[in-house]
Image 1 (cartoon, protein in one colour):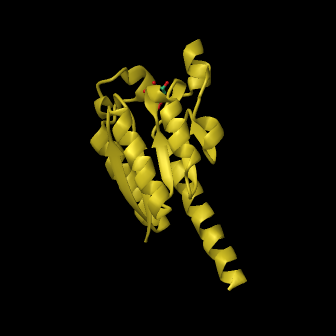
Image 2: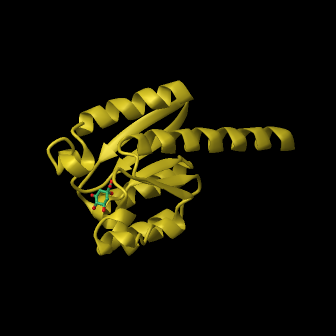
Length: 154
Ligand code: DQA
């Protein structure tokens, strides 16, 4: 099974109690189970991590770049201002999908800017926890396309 990192930024450990009208009632543990289960069906070995610490996210992105591991990243509030995260994403050596549970474009003005989007492979937002499932599906397709084209050149 191909490894994938699912990285969640600040306050996402509070899913379930945090603004349930915006983020739903499922907690972070349920999100972990959903991602692992979705990954298993897609042939992906999913490692889900959460941190409130920008430096830790940067270190995990370096780890992913060194191992060429695809990433599904919800940078949470860092989306809107972390140039450190953007620079780390710019070093990626495998697909990186930015995800959001809510649709930031439909919310407050400060959420309309993503400083990381331009360095990501693509962005999926607004589908609730399904955003993660869609992102994992995109990763599975990209990984298998990559394997197919590597096979053809051999
Ligand atoms: C979020 C959207 C961000 O604007 C917010 O700061 C979050 C969560 C989302 O998943 O919808 O923490 O990334």
